[in-house]
Structures are given as C-alpha cells and as structure tokens.
Length: 187
Ligand SMILES: Cc1cc2nc3c(=O)[nH]c(=O)nc-3n(C[C@H](O)[C@H](O)[C@H](O)COP(=O)(O)O)c2cc1C
Image (cartoon, rainbow, N blue to C red):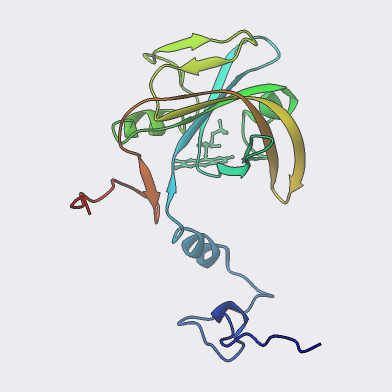
C-alpha cells in the first residue's frame, strides 16, 4: 500500500521555522510568560455562585472556554489564592456571564478586593440559589461536572443546564486592556 504524502508540512511541525522571539522553555520569566499570554484576545466573563453560608460570590474571569457540545460543557479556572476559591471549588452550581461592551465597570467591580461586588448590580436567583446577573451577552447556568488540578489554578468544568442570550457587542480583553470590536463594513 502506498502511503499518501502530504504536499506541505504544516507550519506547526516545521522545525526550521524560527519565531521572532525565542524563550528558553526551561527558564520562563513570569513577566514574559504573562505578556505572551496577553497576546491571546479573549472575552470577559463574571462567574457567580453562593458560598456555604448562602452569600452571593462572584468574580471576573477570562479563562472561560467552550469545551464540549454533546454533552454541553464549558470550563474556566480559578486561582488557588482567590478569596472565592473555597466557594467555587465546593459548589455544585455556578453561572457564567459573558459581558457586553458596556459592562467594563462591572468587570472592574468583580475583580476588586474587599468590596461588595454585587452592590448596585441587578440580579436574580435560580432554583439552585445561584445569583444571576440580569444583563449579559450570554449566560450559562451550570452544575459542576469535573474539577482538575491546574498548577496554581483549579480547572472547573460545568455542564450547561440553561443558557440565555441578549443582544449586544462583546467586551474584549487584550494585552491587559479592554477593547471593543472594530466596526467593519458588512460583506
Ligand atoms: C480581565 C480579568 C480576567 C480575570 N480572569 C481570572 C480568571 O480566569 N481566574 C481567576 O482566578 N482570576 C481571574 N481574574 C482575577 C479575579 O477577577 C480577581 O481580581 C482576583 O482573583 C482577586 O480577587 P479574589 O481574591 O476575591 O478572587 C481576572 C481579572 C481580570 C481583571
């Protein structure tokens, strides 16, 4: 049997290809690592749950990612140093809200320490007792499906039980700053 040869080696397999800036993988400088990761533009989410005392907790997170369509799974990761760590790792229910371009202040509010992050925020509560924001681009109500070790973070995988969407433009995070989608002409 003749094996079919691929005509072109995919660039990610080509050893001769040099990057503009190479870093020794055995000694990664954390600042350089952060800067390189910042090249990946993301959306911004607020993740919410309630703690074991029934108090609403929430935090800004851009580690959100889609994971599986069938079953419907999403993931995000929480720093082990977070004040919300215990609440999110112990809960079986949480909600993820993808923010719109007008929610930059909310993003800042849910990243700030030692304040009431829910002050002045319109919320409702689902049957599991999870606090839900009423404004968002997309909202995923989840039950915790898996928890995985991830270095200084824990990866939380949620099964989406209910989703809601609202009209709007996304809030974007890139190189440590907030951005908006550039206006483009319809094709
Ligand atoms: C844009 C943005 C994205 C963030 N993403 C995450 C994240 O994915 N996971 C995480 O643990 N913290 C993330 N943080 C930090 C938390 O929102 C929060 O500021 C930090 O954990 C300190 O508060 P805490 O100790 O109450 O969690 C992010 C902050 C910002 C501003």
